[in-house]
Amino acid sequence: MADLVAGFATAMEPTNFLMILVGTMLGLFAGALPGLSSPMAIVVLLPLTYTMNALPALLVMIGVYVGTKLGGSFAAVLLRTPGTPGAACTALDGFPMAERGQAGLALGYATVGSTAGGVFGWLLAIIFIPLLSTVAVKSSNADIALVGVMGLFMVSAFVRGSMLRGLIGVFLGLLISTVGLDKIDASERLTFGNIDLLSGVPFAAALTGFFGIAVVLSDVKLIGRKEVLITDKVNMALPTFRDMAARWRAMLTGAFFGTGVGAIPGVGAEGATWVAYASIRGQSKNPENFGKGEPDGIVAPEAANNATTGGTMVPMLTLGIPGDGSTAVILGAFILHGIEPGVLLMQTSSELVYGMLAGLLISTILMFLIAWLAIRVFIYMLQQDRSWLFPMVLVLACLGAFATMGSTFPVYVAIVLGVVGFLMEKARFPVVTVVLGIILGPIIEENIRLALVLSGDDWGTFVATWPRIALVSVIVVLLAWEVYRQVRGAEPEAVRNDQPIGD
Image 1 (spheres, rainbow, N blue to C red):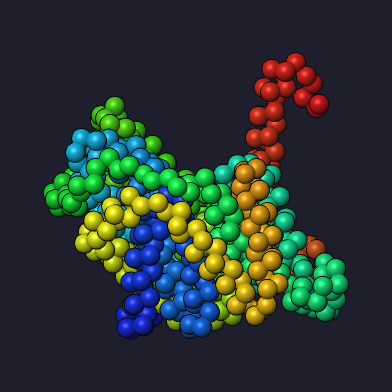
Image 2: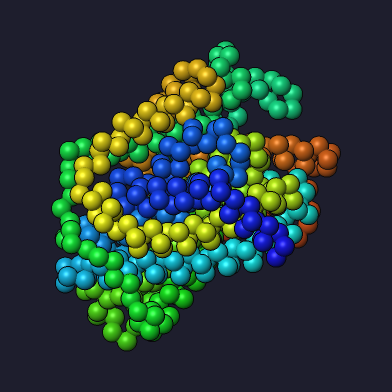
């Protein structure tokens, strides 16, 4: 508790509080505009944080991360087009309410549900992060390496699409992470004689390429398109305390699935909201009302949506494994500010961790206040052609890449990786797995090699203890499940085509 109180004291310092406020406002705006995303908004902010200390830089990103969760529901209710993937569920009942002339009340349900879910997720985060960190600090090199490998497999297994596509993305990221001088024997790897690659592929260039330029290329089709709101006469109408108290089951269900499912690397809010929606619909006495403007159909997914912010913090701050694309970029910001994420983070930077946790709750409260007071501004923004933001995103992305080395080489790298990321998304390969491979690759490689040195090149060290056996078992189970899914999915197709399964 003393560390947490100290974290709040630090987060409430004027500069840090301002960063949380600015980040939350930007997050709400970015989330409200379909075509923009939380990872892209954070990437665009990266170059502006290079000269900051680590904590204020990370706090502004926390604010963006939290704000985009609720911001996506504004577009979902008023346009039936979710501003973020996690807000897709909200459109199912939010838009029908808006059609009945209750847009303000629908936004009120979303705001209160999001705030309640965010607070619940924060409570679980401050409980489990210290507990897991206490265990994590006792880890050896072999344990750390296995945790990293398990994280790669888990993200590959749970992101959209097949695990095979995820593993291909991870392999590409691992390949990128090996470029440059070997940290142990200083030999050149995959530099092809280019001296600019001796220090490796610029990490900021990879982030801006995959999460900035690639997104703009994907959304070029939005240029010149303006949205027509269901209504532009909206005043936020917060539900009464009694009304929300009667919907405690929806809030609790959403918060529970948001933190639980959100803590699984690779799932994030997109999976958690649908699970919460299906669960609360199954519990309802009137399931036929869902999809027609049922308030519980807004409260549950929105609570899950924001509860994931606490859930994703657990693996990120204890194991160095991001829960979604946004936390992958935040992990990248750790590295850019000279902080190595992973199991030792709480031991080496506990003040930073508790400052971030305090900022998470402060941002959730500010999110509620800003949404309540500035709803007219959001409605105005939703009516504009948002493609005018794309040139600014490209310029800031290129500036961020340029600033890392003071040369144009990272800019070229960012453009190339942006095109690669765009093509991968078109082919349904999740780019977050590539970034995760880049982040965890050096950590996994270094710890594998150190573990082998300490054990006399004995690979049996990776199954020498029960915790390691458990980690290896999780990896094997994930692989076996994917093989089973592929075989089960291939059999009907082969039978349908009258072809042998092996062909």
